[in-house]
Every structure is written in structure tokens, then in C-alpha cells.
Image 1: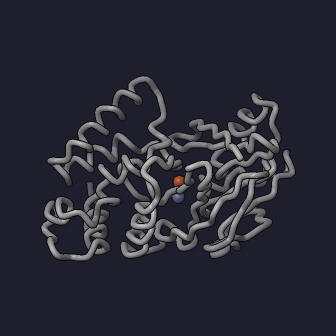
Image 2 (image 1 turned 135 degrees about the vertical axis):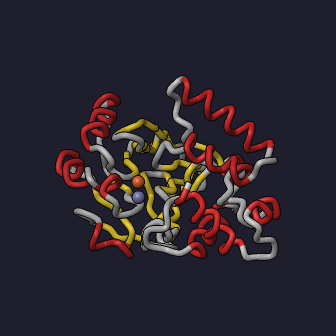
Length: 255
Ligand code: ZN
Ligand code: FE
């Protein structure tokens, strides 16, 4: 198995992703922020679209489902717990379920918190995970429909993946997340290095996505809610990582 992954910006700060199993030629997109841009990327490569993989129900992730399904006959896969909110869904999937793109298998992880039924798609053999709006480079999603404990559960689980795993986040929020992250860990050289490299990329209009699990483990305050330095920064030494993540998230919301 071998998976080609294409990243391209769309809307104001979303990313679109096209996936293609090299052996079978089967294709998928992750979420549908912008049907026109996704079509353009598909056409430029002479590909089709066999599947749409939705991470959660928000309109900037599902808004192109109808047009792309109609144009390419794609099957729409989405979270079981949001089945009624995913336009034109065909297959509802959840934790423990699987999806296979040609020869490339993905695990479905339930990662609720940003929305109640948010899922992630983990292609273990390709060392790639599509996290939607749960994890961002140097940040995490807003807690619209879930709790800090649920978000920490997701972060802790992402933290168990191999450090080289590529993390495909759905938005380019990195520099604004960086400005906040710096206010939490003022003494983290991995964070300093991360920010220098992210700034250089953005100056040349290069996406900071994908990031890696290792880079986030070392620099992202939400992935580091179990670290003493983060606990200390929010005056919560001895508190649970969930409560610390909740406080960091609250500060970020007010930042
Ligand atoms: Zn969202
Ligand atoms: Fe989004």
C-alpha cells in the first residue's frame, strides 16, 4: 500500500486534502470545504473522487458534499454520532470501525469535543492522521459541543502515535496559535524553534500543515497539558491534565 496525499488551501483558512491509493487509483477527499476548489484539484490530476471522508458536521467541512457527490458519484463517509447532520451521508462510521481506500486501511477514532461526534481517520501504514478541527498546529479546536476531559482524551491518544506521524489539521491557524502558546510556555525552546520555522513557511505562503505528532508533543500547550511546565504556567500544579487543558482553552478563548 502507498498513499498519495495532496494539501491545498481553500476558503479563507481551510485546507483541502486529496488522497489516492497508488496501487488501485482509488481517491478520496477529507471534508468538503470548497467544492469548486476540490474539483479543480481533482481535474488538474485527471483523477475522480470515490469517497468523501467527513470529520464533523460543520459547514466548512461538509458544504461541498452535495456538489461533489453529484459530480463524481463519491460515497460519503461520516461520523455515526452526527449522521443526521452530515448532508448526503451514505456510510456512518465510529470508533472501532474501519474504512479502506483501495489497499490503504484507516482506523476510525472517536475524537469528540469540538463537536459531539467528531472523528479522526488514522492511516497507520501511511503514518498519517486526519484530525479535522480536533488538533491544530500549536492548538486545539474550540469546545463547542464537548468538554475539556474529552479533548484531553483525544490529545492523550494522539500522543501515543509514533512521533513521525503526519498530522493533517483542517485550518491554517498556526501563527495565531503560536502567539498564544508563547504566553503559556515562556521557556520552551522547542516552541521557539517551531515558531521560527512556521513563520518562515508562512512568509513564503507554504502551509504549516501537515505537522507531526512529535512536533506537537514538544510544543503544543494542549498536547502538553500533562507537563509540569504547563501546569505551572497556569498555577495548577497537581491538577488533572483535563482541568489544565480546560484552563488553557479558556485563556485561549479570551486571548
Ligand atoms: Zn469545525
Ligand atoms: Fe473547521
